[in-house]
Image 1 (cartoon, helix red, strand yellow):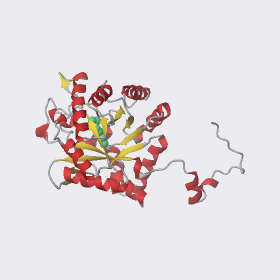
Image 2: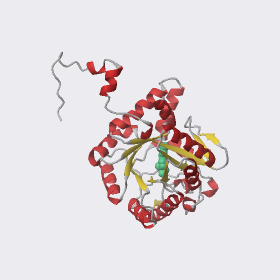
Image 3: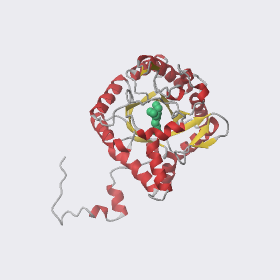
Length: 332
Ligand code: PBG
């Protein structure tokens, strides 16, 4: 489609920017609370809300407080919450068995949310890193991240989460073959409506730093994640990964991190036209909050501008720690 622009002064492109009313009329994209998936951190205890130092405004919450947060999110019109556990170091092992414990933090939080706020969709993260003694998303054997044994463990983890009541499974591990294995296991177990939102194009990114503090994985991680997460230099590879995950049964796909990867969001949406999400990750959140706290930027405005940018790039929605703050602003 070739845009038609008449010669000046027939075309004065400032006309459609002349008043707020006209600007509202020609606005191409919108942001609403229903665009958000809110990532939250779960910890043990009762009545606990503990600030995460590197993510101002973000808390680790005990299960009862997570349920309260879900009630708040539901009232704000946020459709989904994504759970990340801060697992005690004593529960981290080589075999990561805590990952599929029906009573682990994530599974307890799923049940608590389902009781307290039944309209909220609960999303989970599937990867072994919160339970792994060496901080990796997969099993480590002789210094290598092994694929197929990891997928078997991830399937057990997936089934435990679905049994607890999860609505959306979010594999963030970047192993090969996991989507098909999970879909198959979910179907066989009768969980036909449990959806998979694949972290399909997940980059080996330094923007995840504050998250690893939040879940207590920073100290544990030996080495880097470059043999499974993507090289930030690549873009065609993201399309192959997305297509592969869709062919294996992913219902929705994610690009991660967000703002530095909007070109990928746009390519994915244009190429496949499937429900596409971006994760505005911990480091992006921390950067905006830090600059705002220093008075160097207007935090609220930059928050809203960054969220709208995801919509403009073609994303259907955004996983963002800003979800409740942005929803409050949007709701007036
Ligand atoms: C773990 C996982 C990570 C994030 C989500 N799931 C960290 C990692 O891959 O090291 C990062 C989220 C964020 O930075 O906000 N599989």
